[in-house]
Amino acid sequence: MKKIAFVIATLAVSLVLVGTVSARDLAASLAIDVSKILAADNQPLIVLSTSVKQVPARPSSPDALPETDPLHWYDMEYAGWGVKKINLPQSPADGAIGKKVIFIVHGDHPWTTACTAGAKKIADAYQMDFKAMSPNWDLAVQNQMIDQAINERPDAIFLIPLDAKTAPQQARKINQAGIPLFIFNTLPTADAMAYAIAWTGPDDFGQQRVLAKVWADEMKKRNAGAKEIGVAYLQHAPGGSPFYARSFGPISTLSTYAPMVKTLVKDSPGFEADKANQVVSDWLTRFGPSLKGMFAADDSAQAIGIFEALKKANRNDVVVVAAGNSKQGMDLVKEGKLFAITYQTAEGDGALTVKTAADWFNGKKVNEITYLPQQIITKANVDKFYPPQW
Image 1: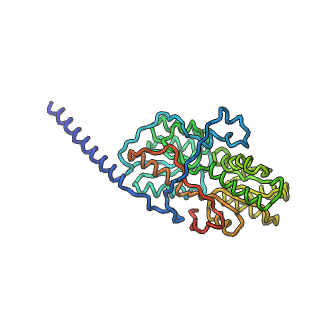
Image 2: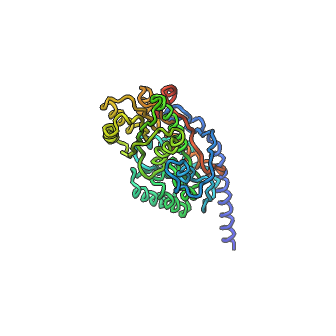
Image 3: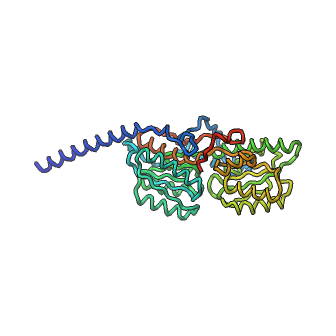
């Protein structure tokens, strides 16, 4: 009996000590202030959108609507809004300090490098054990990485889904393993969002819709009186939400905002300047002076390829806009070549999802969806975004 009593007393002391340590860790975690941390462009690393997303009522059958109708893309643009969550783990509410987290991105790219750097800045501030993994745009490899991450039993997994339609299976697997999931940057379907604690990232559809209007206004000004303005789209990697947001977002917006803007062609040449150059050169030969505008999903390699092709064809009448704000893109804006691009903080994207998880570990209520701010960059304001993040 004495031995049993001793064991019980020892366990009681241990539990008290664990509780004391947990309370101390939580207090220390709550005291951490990341608001003063800057990204490489000297902008605050954590900046939230101040605008409120207007979410319309869902049509009964969005897929039955034409692709030129913005509501056709409802289930992608508004994925996660009002979704019923499934089997979500509860916050331990014991602080973010010392938590082991695994950060799985979509592929190798300078943007991804900057995004991961931003995430690590926040993880380091909270003394997290941070591990980043990249499948280099291979869905099968990403699935293997998710299995590997689950086997490592981290306190949280962060994921950029490579394919919106297969994301639910990935999210369900992580959820069934009892591991908190935070999805970021790329929108999956609502089925995947049901298994995620939160989603953070850019309002890609909304941002591209704004850019499309700026683009159309400039093309109408340069082609006053034209009954038709032909345009082309260099798309993102097929499968992920940027593929749809950065082509069908503008197309569906302009169907009513500027119906004289007609899509002549669209293609996904990848993220190598040479391939973009070849595709655009073919378009310029095929469509000639009818091609008046180009919308690129990427303001770096794709944009460089575009302007190499335009230079070879001796064309300076094409209005080009692009998503993102890399060094190449901002330099092209400053030179007066790219008319406009979107501000898309790569470091802030990675940082925001880790900060959201830290808040969740700290027992705070987190929003199910949090957007990064939207801005359009033109020659008039590009200087304030230097130095570039990537």
